[in-house]
Amino acid sequence: MSGPLQLIATAPMGLEAVVARELKELGYEDTAVENGRVHFTGNLIDICRCNLWLRTSDRILIKMGEFTALTFDELFEGTKALPWQEWIPANGEFPVEGRSHKSQLSSVPACQGIVKKAVVEKLKQSHSTEWFKETGPRYVIEVNLLNDKALLTLDTTGPALHKRGYRKHATEAPLKETMAAALILLSRWNQNPARPFYDPCCGSGTLPIEAAMIGWNLAPGLRRTFNAESWPAVPERLWQEAREEAFDAVRDDIPLNIAGSDIDPEAIEIAKAAAKSAGLAKEIKFECLPAVKIQPQGDYGCMITNPPYGERIGEEKEVRKLISQFGRIMAGLPTWSFFALTPTKQFEHDFQRKADKRRKLYNGRIECQYLQFLGPLPPRH
Image (cartoon, rainbow, N blue to C red; front, side, top):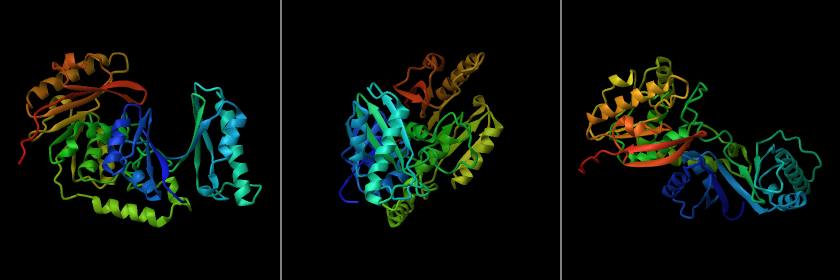
């Protein structure tokens, strides 16, 4: 593969700036942010590094090309002109996914079919075959049409990056790992991970586990595999190099003070199992406790939580009561900071304090505010 690659880190809505900051901290300076995506330049090793390291991105894509496509002919010719043969071998499996918004070519299935046909024609020329069995490595192609511009990408990731590999049981968590990591990074707790960290509505433990991974500088992708690991175009030695770099970067000598509690005993058992699988069982204290009984230990801590939203009838009253309990608890913890992701409009009223900062984020499709009630920073030693 010659020359630099145009790469895209996809981002959940509202987290583009967080993904861009992560990329800059990894050493990528030329980032360009747009809705749902952060563009940057890299080489083959950067496919490996970014899949292993990015905490808040959903997936890493290779930008194959972008062009105007008002007709199916333009879509076909534009797609066929791209260098698919540099990536996809004769036995490669290459499904096509698609989206269309505000474009003449509005039929997504038709666009997928045209792109598939164009890629096949290009591969026929370079691989000297008429038939593709598609039994080999997986190359997911996406055609994304917006305002009559077609963006074509290859997905290097496979299952989205929030699937860290430490959950043995697939549970529908109310908070994805990528969003949990973003809440922690936005709180700036990571600048001093020896500070206490507490989640009083921890559910299956996503926030405390992500905090421990950030605290110890554990690359979130170390326990899983990626589509591009089986691609001939990305040498295996690059993956080994990136993984070795990630193992060398672990800082497990930092003492952590991380705890989580929840009223649901089953959720706490799932949390403990996930922490054990992540190699962090001894670093996180999980307890089955109602929020009113929590007793966070230490000073200058961060309480970060995704409290229940009260979506079912009759639950709203309980949620408002819980928020007012949090307000009382925090009044007794004058050096602590409190952060909550919530769609509840009257949160500050019930908490009995105005947020120092707020940020609009989307938890799945639910519009939320990330409310930040800031306490004093720990004194510098």
